[in-house]
Image (cartoon, rainbow, N blue to C red; front, top):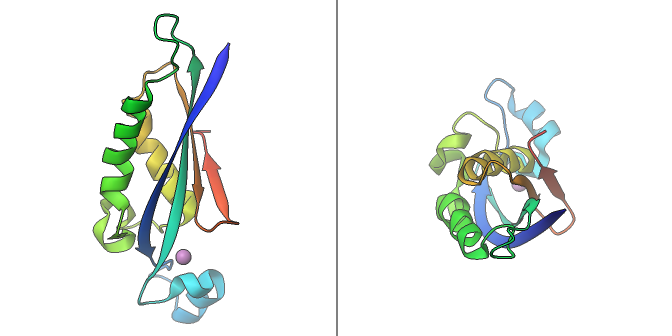
Length: 136
Ligand code: NI
């Protein structure tokens, strides 16, 4: 019997989507407003979902205090009010799209969880646009 527990979190961050090896016109055509050379911000909403068996002793899949601290340390402290392109090492050479941010968050959190637990990251870049990644 597998149960999924989820916790929401939030961070504000700036980014710019572009490729150095493309000219401005191509970057503008593909990335549009997100290619603004002066960067721009998003209010990211994050849902971290952990799936596993209920521990018969505690009744928990994972202690929410533990999950809360992992999200704070790995995501909020690392990304909140940061310029992702400039200040976050993972995006030095990786475009900080919602897709890539979700994968980076997954890769930071997964090793900190018990091996028996499955993880899914859902990241909203806008209220209408969101992506999810579960390691597949
Ligand atoms: Ni953007």
